Amino acid sequence: MSPKTWSNWITEAARYKPSKADLAAARNALIRSLEDPAALSQAVSPATLPASGPANGLTPGEARRSLNLIGRLEELWQDCLMVRKHAIKHNDQSGEEIKLLKAFCQSINMRNGIIGNVLAALEKLWNMQKMQDFHDAVIDEVRKESPECAARIVARMTRLAAASGVQDEGARV
Image 1 (cartoon, rainbow, N blue to C red):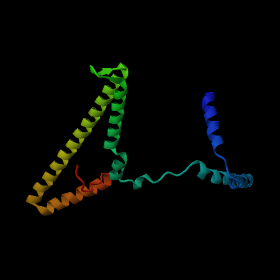
Image 2 (image 1 turned 30 degrees about the vertical axis):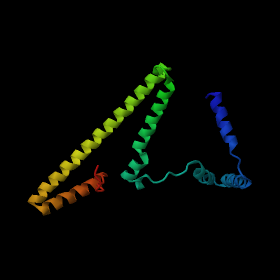
Image 3 (image 1 turned 60 degrees about the horizontal axis):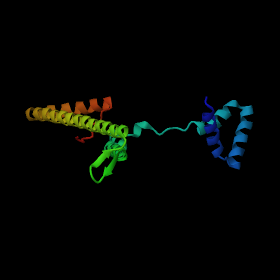
Image 4 (image 1 turned 180 degrees about the vertical axis):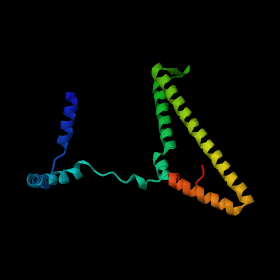
């Protein structure tokens, strides 16, 4: 382990100043653990291993909204433009000139990567839309022939989606 890492750990630990009540509670836990070793793990475990929130309560829609993909891509795009702005200089005679070639090329590569990611996401969204349109068209054709059969198919597909963890909330792309 590097001395710098150790020093950082010590510095971080020194920032926390326990209160007198915390110290008294720790002393009591240690005294109780002499008689019952399990008491120490019960007292220390909640402090060192916080329980995470239940992941099953997060819906796919909430997960997508929390990602804010478009906002993050916009932020990355602005970062690329800042790198570009830093890499060029403005002259009255010739307009823009490259000041830092490596940074300028990096900004081009980063912007190209972002555009590629956006196009890939748009292609996936377009494919999802086409798949949903086809699904709806198939159900409509079955419904024209037999509304009862279409209702049974939709009910079975809904059960299958719920069983496989793919919830159709009625939202369309």
